[in-house]
Amino acid sequence: MKIGITCYPTYGGSGVVATELGKELAMLGHQVHFISYAFPHRLTHFYENIFYHEVEMSNYPLFEHSLYSLALTSKMLEVIEYEKLDILHVHYAIPHAISAYFAKQILKKSSSDIKLITTLHGTDITLVGLEPSFLPLVKFSIEESDGVTAVSRYLKEKTLTNYDICKDINVIYNFIDTDLFKPGTNETFRNHIAPNGERVLVHTSNFRVVKRVSDAIRVVKEVKDVVPVKLILIGDGPDRSECERLTRELDLTNDVKFLGKQDGLTELLNASDLFLMPSQSESFGLSALEAMACGVPVVSSSVGGLPELIRHNETGYIAEIGDVSRMAKYTIDLLMNERKYKVFSANSRTRAHKKFNKEIIIPKYVKYYEEIIGK
Image 1 (cartoon, rainbow, N blue to C red):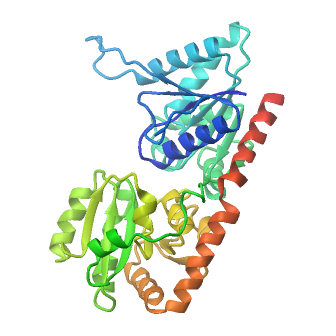
Image 2 (cartoon, rainbow, N blue to C red):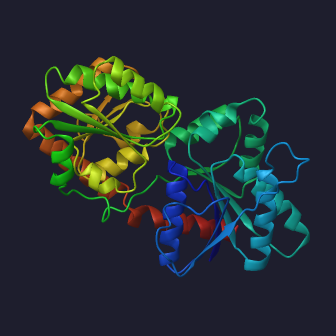
Image 3 (spheres, rainbow, N blue to C red):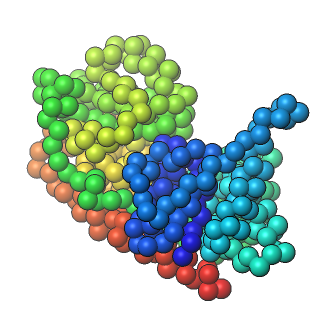
C-alpha cells in the first residue's frame, strides 16, 4: 500500500504515535509519505520506504495570519496525485481532517479514489474540538471520513456523545516497541540525581495546565517527609515557569529537577522507580505506557483512558483527580514495600508487552486499512 500520514511533527503523543506507525509500516514493505510543516522528530534514521513532503507556507503580506490549513490541502493534493496514494491517514482532527476532506473533494473529478482515515487522539475531541467555532467542523470531518479510529474506548464514547454522531469508530490502542522500552539500569544518571540513595520519581509531559504537573511536585512535598525522594521532570511547555515557581515556594529546589525536552527516555526511565501522571485529561497516556514497559509502576489520576491502561493495585495505583494526599500515600506504599514493588514492576512490564506491544497493534492498523480500501 501507499499511505500518506499527516501529523504534528512535535513531541506530543499524537505525533509520536503517527511517526512510529509510519516507521513500522515502512518496515513491513508499505510506502509511507509524511506530509507536515516540519520533519517528524521521531524520524531519526533513514528508512528506505519513507518520504517526507514539507508544507510550504506563503508569506504574502495581505495575509495577516498563517493559512496552514489551505497550504496543507494543496500539498495533500500534490502528493496524492503524483504518488498515487491509496490511503491518507491523518492524526488529530484539527486541522488535518478538514484539509484532507477538502483534498478528497477536489480529487473527485479525477480518477483518484483516495480513502481518508482519521485517528482521534484526545484534546482534538475533548478540548479544542469543543470550541464553538470548531465543533461543527470536527463533527463534519469525522462523519465524512471513510474510517475513524480512537486511541481508547473512553475517547470513542466521548466522541459519539460530544458530537452527537452515528459513526463506526474503531478503537486501536497506542502501542510501544517493547524491545526499545525495556527494563534496565542507569546507575550513572541515578547516582547523579540521587547521590544519597533517594528513590527517584519521574514525570514527562508537554507541561500544559491539563497535565497538572504541579500536583506531582506537591506529591513530592508530602512523600519526602517519609521517604527520601527526588523528582525528575521531563518536557517543556506553558506551565513550566509556574511549576518552577512552586518548587521554590515549597523549598524543593534540591529535590525537583527540570530536564527539559529529552530524547533518551529509556535511559531516564531506567533510572527511575515510579512514574507520576496526575493529569486532568488523558485519553490514553502514552508516557505512562513507556514507563510500564520499562518496569516502572505508575501512580495516576482516574481520568479518561488511564483506567484502560493501568490496572489499579496491580501495575500501579489510580486516585481521584487532584487528590495529592492519596497519590502520596500510594507512592509511599510502593516505595516502602520492596516485595510489592517488585510484583508491580513485573506486572507493568508484562501488561505493556502482552497488550500494547507494536507487534500486536500494528497488524490491527493494516487490517483496518485493507477493510477501508475494500469498501
